Length: 327
Image 1 (cartoon, rainbow, N blue to C red):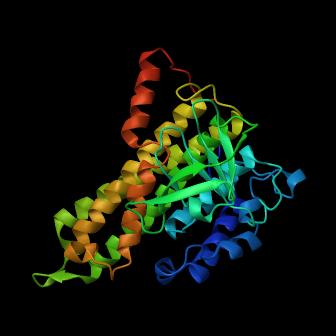
Image 2: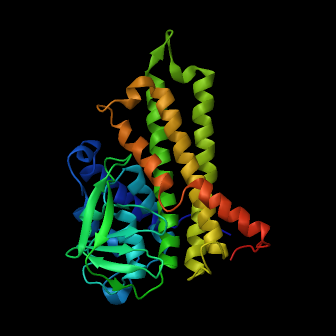
Image 3: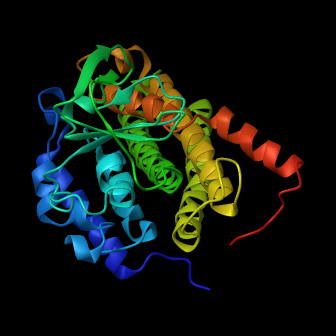
């Protein structure tokens, strides 16, 4: 079987990369909250998963995966996963979703704060009695401190809401996989920056990239990313095949999504650690753009469940006798 991405899928990713390179450079991360958002909408990025009857393209998560990886590689700000991946399954008939005119934020189960909620026209809030949909007019936001300056967090309260008609679980599953894809992009970018710096920074009369300790660190990151990326690809395929997971810890779709998120999060955190050690003290400075990717690795690794949480759920499922294989 051929598990490679198709030429169309790769071409879409290339288009997204070109758009982000032109309209979301590192300097834009310092001054803009939604760089390249309109440009991405023009090339149909937000319409990828929206049903055709709602002016979307009706593609699967697997089709969008390489493009989502590019948004992580560029450290794109804004509620990207929530609007482009979760919203098409939760709110498929909302006008303006496919065009990117309507932005959606999500407060997942167990999360204290919602990222990028100040940019959202609609906020999906998970509650014990069921998910609620809150409009911009009804929501009340209070900023909270976070690690990622381009992904601010907000405490969400509201004066009015409506019950969400569709189940939240399938959207959370796909958002988890999409976030894992972004983490792969972040890790790849951190590795690129580290390798480039190690080739130019000299110490004791030689590039630090020639030192065995530095080589081993960067090689470990490359191996971690190489092992995590196929898990993310598999999880996307399984999510497309299995339209509805059987619950937070059940079903091969959720098990694969958890595996992908744990591996991608750990790879990105490892890449961040190696980048800091490679760059030295300069890696912490405000002047260096590296800090944006470090913060994104840390914030996304915790989004939609951290590695420890997902591994614990997988372990519990396997010990309970769930040894089913794909699909």
